[in-house]
Amino acid sequence: KDIEFIRSYYYNKLELTRFSSSVGKFVGFTEYGVRNAAAWNNNPSYLSAMKARKEAYCLHNIQIKYDNAL
Image 1 (cartoon, one colour):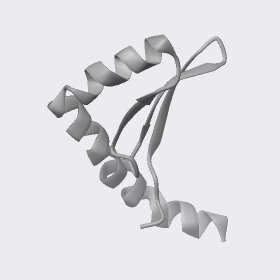
Image 2 (cartoon, rainbow, N blue to C red):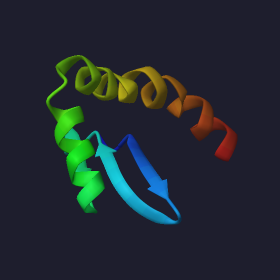
Image 3 (cartoon, rainbow, N blue to C red):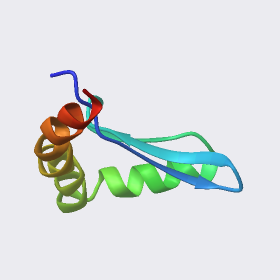
Image 4 (cartoon, rainbow, N blue to C red):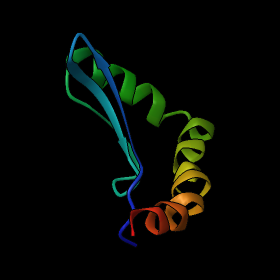
């Protein structure tokens, strides 16, 4: 429940777009980022692939990372 997958896209140190698994969609922060977010949110296969990354990456590796931290 407490794990969140975030993928951010930057250009020139400015965040353009972000996907957050807790929101479940892309959010744009600039004019260009808003256009990209709208296009990616309208692509169901890409959106479902990003949602699946939490399970494929985060939940798979959390125990390993937790054990190494201790």
